[in-house]
Amino acid sequence: MTTKTLLKNINIVNEGQIFTADVLIDEGFIKKISPGIETAGVQIIDGTGKYLFPGIIDGQVHFREPGLTHKGDLYTESKAAVAGGVTSFIDMPNTVPNVLTTELLYQKYETAAKQSLANFGFFLGVNGDNIDTITQLDTSDILGISDDGLYFTGKGNLLADNPGVMEKLFANCKSIIAIHSEKEKIIEENEKCYHKKYGAEIPVEFHPLIRSEDACYEATKQAITLAHKYNARLHILHLSTEAETHLFRNDLPLKDKRITTEVSVHHLWFSNNDYSSLGTLIKWNPAIKTETDKKGLLQALLDDRIDIITTDHAPHTLEEKLQPYLRSMSGAPMVQHSLNIMLEFYKQGLISLEKITEKMCHNPAIIYSIEKRGFIREGYFADLTIVDLTANWMVSKENLLYKCGWSPLEGTTFGTKVTHTFVNGNLIYDNGIFFEEVKGKALTMYKK
Image (tube, rainbow, N blue to C red):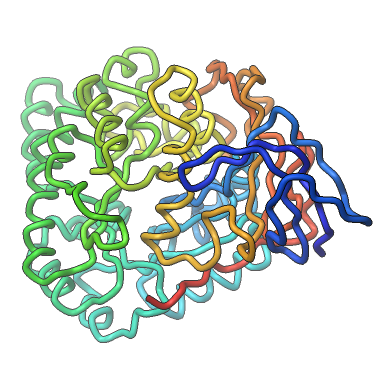
């Protein structure tokens, strides 16, 4: 159920510009963008002093459904996403069962249509067992193929450790291939060294030395070499080192790139200095690394070697996280706070609002060929986020919406706040109040 809504006198951040205008939303779409729109019978929201962004498109999340719903599910995590200004997400295949068939893929779409408050898309999983099936599929209507997270269900599932499988995939698959780029063999050797010294009680501070720069760099370099050989469409997930950023290009438009990459917000926000206070709460794969890496990733984002920002939202229960290093699960929930993190960098003078919008809204739509989303344009879906850039608030258990009920950001004060989120023209979130009657839609792809 959509109603006509008129956003009055709001600062629009879109396509490299910031300008003040009105926006008319009608029948789920952006009907008109202009100063001084006057029309009867509409809900009016005064946007004076506020900023309007296209809805965030998060290109990498783990919402845990099916099979791991004690950590999160499509309803709870999409609700947290919408509260953070995220209107669309693409979910990874490491649910239970792993999404290794089109039948399981479409079952996820059916479930999401009943539960998700945000728009949704899903990766199809690939490993050594289903590679022959994948290479024979028509993947033209599939957002992407990925191995991410599948190593949790068995060693040897990372493409980076199987160059033969990766080469076969690159030679035959025409869709985006999004990979987790670490060399498990290097990681295992590093872990053995620290296990010799510390036994089973390895301090978490050594995580970035175990899941090392070398493990990441060698995997990414190999994948890019093979992708060039076959002109494959490769996307490297959650880049974590400054060294890797120099493997990517910024001398051609995004629409012409065959090899792209992303940075997840936690690799921009945290560094190895935070392990002493946060411990396994910030254990991610790939690992959070040094201050130099953190700064290098931001620089590569600014100069367009890195193309998009994601969260790699990966909830676990607090009990699963508060284990000794080797037993603690990797990943943490971030989707409710990704825009706030980037806007904090804006307030520190490190990035512009226009660049944030490019990396969180425009570019994900371009990379994944998402139809009529990611931009504030007449005729596009009204996926929109209103932000107050002057509101201070603190992250606490009381305002977290993740099913797991915790965040490594607890106690952090942000100076910006999402006030409204529209999904397909429906006001789903309004200053802490949710309207859940209408669910999100499946993301569709435009034909290139």
